[in-house]
Length: 131
Image (cartoon, rainbow, N blue to C red; front, side, top):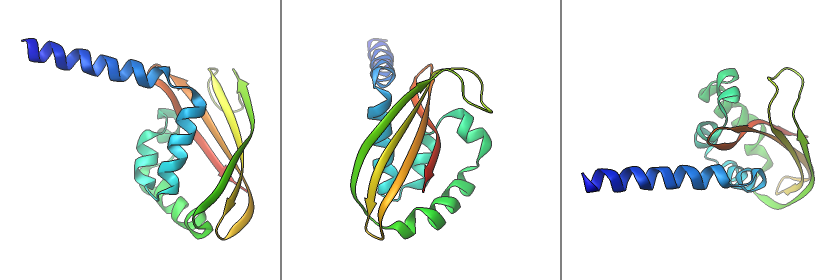
C-alpha cells in the first residue's frame, strides 16, 4: 500500500512539474526533439488539437520532407512571443506564438513559428511552421 501511495504521489509531482513549465521552456524542449530527428516523439508531445488534425505518420512524412533537408540547427534565437486567447480556426483558449530566427546547416536564414496551447497538464505544441 505504501509503495502504491508513493508511486501515485510521484506521478502527481511529475504532472504538477510539467504543468508549471513555461510555454517557452516547453517550446525549447520540443524543438530539441525535432532537431534530434525524433519526429514521432514530437508528435506524441504535441497537443490533442494538433494530433486530431495530423496523424503521426503524416507528421513524420512532413518533417522528413521539410525539416530534415535543412540539416542541423546551428543557431536559434527567439525573436517574438505573443499571447492570444483567440486564434482563427481553433477553440478559444490560452495560446502562445513563439517566433525564432534560425540558422540551419543548409539554410542560413529561416524563421520558425511554434504555436502552443495550454491544456490541463501544461503547454503543448499545436502548430509548427518554417519559412
